Image (cartoon, rainbow, N blue to C red; front, top):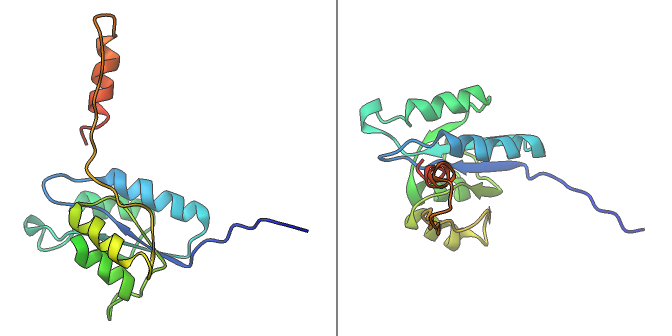
Length: 149
């Protein structure tokens, strides 16, 4: 008999970018699937913010709190991915890293994908819209706004 069984990984590291913009949507889009899959350990890393005493942005912290994630690290870029892969005194290593990031995050994921599982090597979001005079301007605007995080 051949069967199929889905088994969640034990622990995931979820990267949430920071900088000039705040992405609570990245918290939701990464935490909720992990929770639904039954992952026991969920850790989030987001870059420290100078304006908030070196902590991740309060909106990121609030999104984590609302979703019940209490393991949040002020770490960004390739360093955060390395922290998840190898662990530190405060952060246990993870089995899988997910979440978008810049070229350095993508490079770190590429270098570490033999040690940890990764979602993808995400790059910047881009959109191109081809519309003629018959296009509904409301729909065209909605398509543009969808990428305006």
